[in-house]
Length: 316
Length: 281
Image (cartoon, rainbow over all chains, first blue to last red; front, top):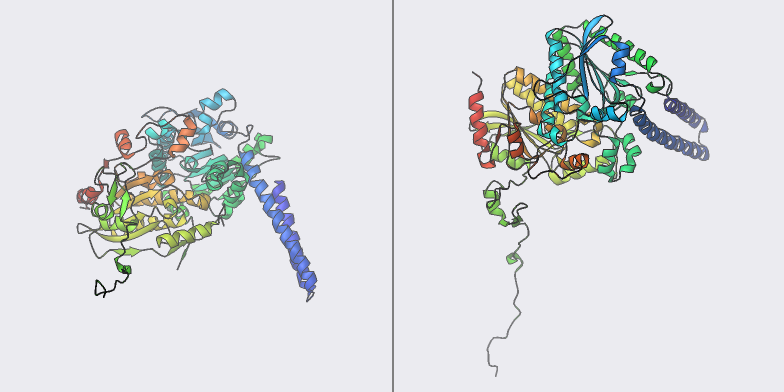
């Protein structure tokens, strides 16, 4: 288990003990004051831990040795055959699409792909797709729908590429269309955030029946660095921004924005990719099994309701 | 004997007659002309000299697009819960309060049902002055409710965007609003109800990458900044200056992502014409 989670739990039990002692203090004002002081200290330590852990997890999510989509494909699926191109402009190496088999069943697999060495990093554009990547993804999702195959997507991107050509070819339109079309696909969709869930560039392949996050992945509307430079006008405030944005898996779960967390081995997925992949496979099998008992109408309805209910508000 | 019979008294200027010039003139950012405010108002807040479209508030927008009278505002009492308890250099809760005070709104959106050349429509207008028109849970919910009303009553839905994108201070909650609204638009589409997206200056980020680009028609005002990434981010990424007119309405029209660029004066009649074409048979 993550040491910071353990530390949080220890703090919680300390807090409870202090609360209990307060009961024994009776009318002794001095004792109550001392206990209050202790409570405040616990609170301050908790703040520090979560600052560390949000940023630490961001670093883990971006770890250069972290397994990328292709490694999960190799370890979890068989019969992988890649599908290229958006049939309009080109093929985007930052997004992989292809047919594969999962536990003997034909499925469509789609995911962001980063490169391991410099040459591949450039080739994969650091996992930042252009519009043709999203259009390729949508095209293959529709193919899966036509032949009633479930879809697995793997998210690991700093974000959609903010380049000149991307704007010219309609980055916004490509993402928007994916959001709308994924909402009404009539086959099961399971998304796994494996590393960085970078804003719209991640969401564009993540409107799914089940959205799972790996323990050390992050999912955010903006990068901590971006947020820090806009809100604090100081990019070095990234640790504080990471904490403020609530980007970790447990926080996302608590906000009701994701469905499940996949545990990672040891110091993170990179320390033991095989076990990490096993854990992912187990979660995918479990969720797909659930979803397969539902009719297409039920799937689409429940997916709608799920996203429909995201975000609370006061009414007065 | 005095030369004059009347002794002089001090001249007194009455308070009411004091001439106030502040707020009577406005400078056009494009052609730098000084314009008489009343002329500007009479000209739909468009510069009479160079046709620069000034940013306008939601109320002005509604009065330009809808027929006079009988407009019903709905879903106006929704307020943000500050889901992350977000604090940067200021508390988000304080930012919200300040924005409400300066704009008189609860959030950056207003829903209204009214008529356009006699045809009933649901209109959802963003308020740019409210934290940059950013989209959080409330904007997401209010627009979704406008779409759901459109589905239920079979009324065309028009959304006027003016926004910097998703609201950072609500983190991934605001990100998910993109999916929520787009999902609702899928249902509107299936119900065969028209959806017209009007893009005004500026429309960027998560708003462009969801409902602003999903109209049966996407129409923009001239010269509006429209894009996914902001110009500064792109310049930093590619390390060169962007060409003149990049990410402006006319550029997007040329690249094929807008159906029309329409002058503010003609916007109502253009949409009205489109609604005739799209009327449910």
